[in-house]
Length: 371
Image (cartoon, rainbow, N blue to C red; front, side):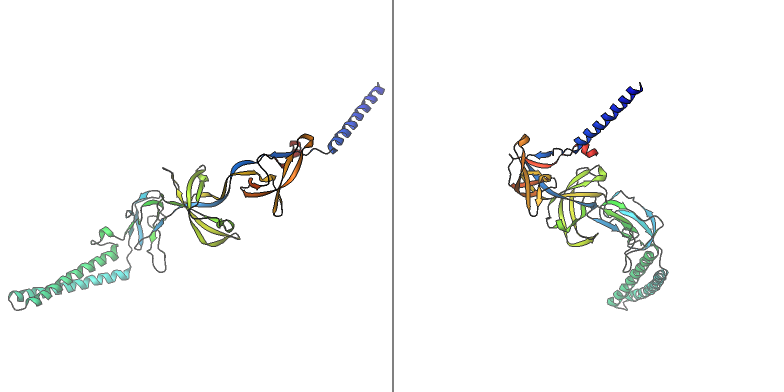
């Protein structure tokens, strides 16, 4: 029994040894190289570039106060539509004490002058009725009285403006009422009730009460590399894609190319602007990130092959044309003249026809991938 067991074990070891030898021998044998093969075909080829940027309104205006003070009331909220001249906020004036004192003094002085002018007028009127003074002198006194009344009214208006920011005479055009300068959507109101605001002057830009924009007139703003800007022309069509809106896209046309480059991350970039054509009912928010696709070059119905089938050697290009079949198959290196490429396919201008078949890259087997 022991003798048979030893024979079985020896046989198993021998089989394992032989199997391993056969496996290694098979692995050491050269494998047949198989290539992809392509038939040239007629198609359109276009070279495009993608520009990143954002969507923004063409006309965005910062509404600022014409007087310094404190926000007393806000009539509008971001997102609401306003007409030109519509009130957005109301400002309560905090009067300057120096200006207030001067305005009050002016009112007191005008009151004194008015009383004196009234006395002179009454006296001159009695003399005129008695025909003791001429009509010219009486008319001069009457004009002086009228001027004193106008000065009193002007002084009181000035006091009201300094103290309250508005007078009875200009209540409809009060500078305390902050009005929109254009019609559009309110994008932002960066102030709150109680915030202090100042008017624009030589040393300060002034406080922005609201930002208003016409959201029906949008533009795409982006930057393009200096290597591609020379191929752009005003009026070129573009396709704008907004990823945040489930790949929503719009047509646009290029309308501005900056004449001056700006440096960004070591590369020269040129700013471009394109007018966006909104679809009916489309609602776009200011500041959306977007991509613009521009067709730089295009060739229609040209003979092409995959660019992976091209061999580049210096300034020359070659393809390997398939000759024969089966064991007689061989690949003949043939010079070709290439044209436009879109990164996947390349135009063939000369060297082969649509009846030829060309060699592509080597086919990689699945087991080779696993290894």
